[in-house]
Structure formats: structure tokens, C-alpha cells
Image: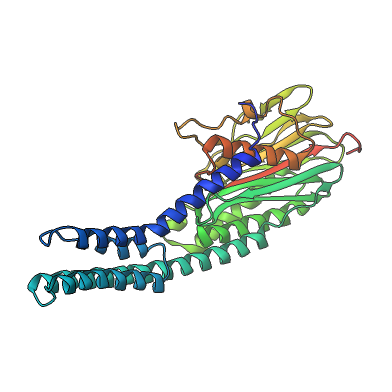
Length: 376
């Protein structure tokens, strides 16, 4: 799949479509009242406009303010009252029934409006807290590390979605530049807490441990301790998939430890684009107690101008309207980009094009480019 940039005209067109739809929804209660009034005053007395008028405050409730919903409800009641005054039937049982129906429906609409507005405030507050926590544990790395150009990006699935457990970190160490990209199971503040534990363990371990496999063991132990601290059924399912990468100071190669995570992608100007699949992936972090063999690093050539792309499964599991998964290798084969930041921009734009503008899961991405102009 070739990269097709999203044009400004197309983006503006989608924005106009969304804006137009939102205006129509907000105008619908007014249209219902106008139609109800016309039906009430222009049809014989045996026909009632209550269904149209009752629908107006219910439609307004999710999209309007409390005052707007109340005004819609009062207007609907006023239309029915005026109809019966004009027909001289204000004191008849049908008039009482219709007005009582509208009062009850209007009360329900106001309750719905209040619940939605309170829920929206709570959701916004929870998301702001989670985003702040996430920014604290996932600071953006420097653009350069010892001859590597670096870029990182986090793409949330939706503006009203809970923050997920995707994470990344890049750090220069006595053993070279080390990076991790992973995904803690779960959403919300609990996931962010587990991310903080994992990233904190990574930053400490990469400075102390000479072997990348031992760093992975540190992370596994940290998640295991966190699971024991939390306890309960949810804690039993606390784990994270991750890929750890190491580019030694001498350069020319990259070491990877894959703990049940999607394989990174190497974009090599000479050898093309390929996934760096492990011969044997280790279990996800936090599951080493199951007794399988410990993680083992593998080495791959990492020549000048090559770029290593680490990502979470929000990228590989992105699907279009027909359920077709996004093909990362095909999308990047032959695609031009000037550096790691441009590569991430290209990937995100292409995924959005493939999915129609939204993704079902968060994406964390890190790109490392070996700078040909510097000696690693």
C-alpha cells in the first residue's frame, strides 16, 4: 500500500461534513416543534401532534444545555396548550392527558441532560488526569542520541477514549542507546500506573545492566511485584508486551529482545523494508514465572541511514471499513521520508487514511535513524 497524503482540501471537506451534521442535530428539536405546531393547527382535532412535540426535548437532551432542553420542553407544552385554547378544548380530558404526557417526557429529558452533562464532566476530568500522568511517565526523548536521530509519538484511539497502556522510552547509557516500546494490558489510570512502574524499571536497569536480556528480566520482575501489590483477579492479568532495542556505541548493528510484541520494522535504503522477526519470542513481561526460557537478544545489521521503527499493535491491528488490516511493510516500501519524525508523520497519516480517520486502539511509535553524517 503506497503512502497517499491526506490533502488539505479533503480534510476541510470532512470537517465541513462533521460541522454540518452537528448543526443539523442541534436544529432537529426546532424542526420537530415547527412540524408539530403545523400538524396541530392544520389537521382535524382527532389527530394529535404530541409524538412530534414529545420527541423534541428528548432529542435536545443529549446535545443541548440544560437551559436549551428546558426551553424546548416549555415550547412543546406551550404549542399543545395553544392548540387546545384555540379549539376550545383546554378543559377536556384529552387536553389534560396530552399536557401531562409532555410534562413527564420533558422531565425525563431534563434528567437525561443532567446525567449526560455530569458524566461528560467526569469523563473529561478522568481523561485530563490520565493524560497528565501519561505525559509525566512518557516524556518525549531528545531528537539526537549519540549519532542517532530519534522521534517518538503517541496517538490515542479517540478524543473521548480512556488512555491506554502503550509506552515508550529512549535513553543513552554506558552500553549505547537503548529504547523500549510496549503495551500494558488495560486502560485508564490503572494502566498508566503500570506504565510508570515499567518505564521506571527500564530507566534504572539500562544504566546498571550490561546485558539487554537482563534489562528485560528487571522489567518482568517489576511488573510481577506490581501484580502482587495490587492483588485480586485483575492483577492476575497484569502483563505487558514489549520490544527492547540497543544500538551500541560502535554502531553498525542493533540488538533486540522481543517479549511477545509485534516485530519492529527496519527500513534500509539498500536492503529494503523488512520485519525483524525473532527466532523465538519471550513471554510478555510479568509472565516469566510460567517457567519458559529467559529472553535472548538477537542482532541485526543497522547501517547508516537505516531507520528502526518500533510500534505497538494499534498500528498492525488498524483495519479499514472492510476489516482489512493495515500492512505496514507494504505501506513503507519505497516511501520517501527525510528522517524519523517524517516517518512517523507518514505512518500516522497513512493509517488514518486506511481506517477512514480513526483507529480502534492507541499507538505508540518510536523511530531511530542511524545518521550517516556521524560516527556511532
